[in-house]
Length: 403
Ligand SMILES: Cc1ncc(COP(=O)(O)O)c(C=O)c1O
Image 1 (cartoon, rainbow, N blue to C red):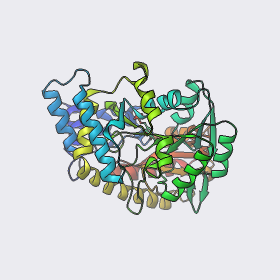
Image 2 (image 1 turned 135 degrees about the horizontal axis):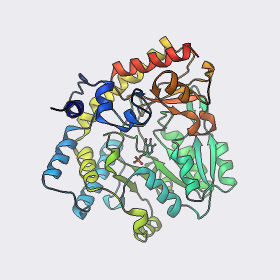
Image 3 (image 1 turned 180 degrees about the vertical axis):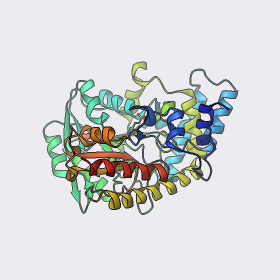
């Protein structure tokens, strides 16, 4: 076996018990994943939202079978229909949300769904309302489409980030129309409760607004918390929302280009039928194969991943308390992202992420790219092995100590 084949193999051998033996920074780097190669050869990867666990065995098996059949052509309708049914069944079985498979439409990825929501499901020319801190494309994509962003700073309540309803109200008053509601939330890891969603719905309804609900992290929620689909909270929410989701985060399939948008009213259904290929093309055949297998048979592997991530989120908190006590951090309720407040470290350079990449050899996401309230923060991806996570925090701490 060649060196690179040896490096790739363990990721496909992990499941079902997620035994991480043999997974090292070197093997991950050799496998060539974006997170491990984005910033140079020697850095520990904690930036892009990819997991170091491969994917679920039923997904690998479905892909192998599809390849065996040479299923590399355009997306067949039967496969698209099967994915829509599998996605709807996942929503019903996991969250009690009754979605008609016919309302599940396919797109290549969640960011495309965001484009489509702005271009086709919000008032032409209207600014987009984005709670901050935010997943960076929520702040950059509207500008590419000729739209302004109205940032709405989230506030802290008992250590948890919540939406500021008065600020949201003002954002609608000054002309905002489409609210980006990312839940579970990247980067803060909040999982919103039903009462919060009802309160948001009231504000949206008062202004005749619309919601783009990004729920791609929904399967990645820890015990004690529960994902509640926003569109399932009331008929009004269902009417004014387009929801975007995908198996791409929970089953680690981002490169396969397959996401879903759930529609909730007749005008949107009509509108969708009139969309051109530029808006809707690009869902991949293998992505549909993988997404279907993930929704239908991926739950046992996901449970093993969640147990591992739950362990890691507490490990991260413990390591920070021990090695970087000046960094404040609340373990996330969902997602595999840690949101670290590094402002008290007083690090040199333009931002902590740049400093950590150079001085600690660790790539993180600069919180400043998540909007102004993220300045001085970094986002750390902890979906890795405990050994690598320990190295990451130790290296951050050593670099902070010499700043
Ligand atoms: C909240 C959120 N939305 C969307 C995406 C990107 O999804 P996609 O690759 O399907 O565009 C990510 C990726 O990390 C994300 O965290």
